[in-house]
Length: 246
Image (cartoon, rainbow, N blue to C red; front, side, top):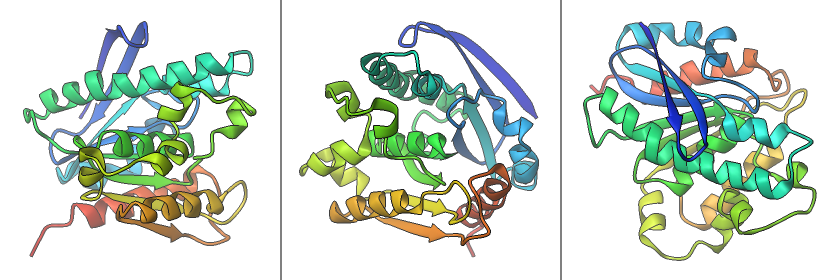
């Protein structure tokens, strides 16, 4: 069962679209790749790959437009505006999208799984590291975590706050870090064409230094930066995560 929702986001100052597949099970927020929309995962047959889990009511999948990612890719956008939009996108996720998902689940305290590939993996990592109070598990596939390529040396406070590679390094003992240490970040990466596995290891090293549980899962040289790889990864990890307890 698929449904759509649309509303005006005061944080992003535009209409936002959210799609949902399924009506039961663990809520999974699946971030699109950099330029994707809420229906991208269906067009690239990810929903088809997840259908057995959806039909078994083990997961319900939500996806939204990649507003921040589209701005990152825009060569005509100024770096300060890119960082600002990404900060606003994170605020939209926490204060608009998560409450909408919880309402849809009829559970005001539902803990979400976040997932994504490429820039979507970055958004999943950012979501759990910034808001571990609502996200309990992140599945980050073929992640693009180093934002330097999009900013060409630019750095300001907004960028610092939306770049886990920056703010995690300075994160001291706090309630946020205590909660994050009770979460888990899975960093899956291929080692084939267009992949950058060293970025996953860089994140893992930083999380490890802060005592945050994580694992890098290398998929080898035959796994490329492509939906074919991600359609294998995500169903396997969600199947493991939602397997019935004996």
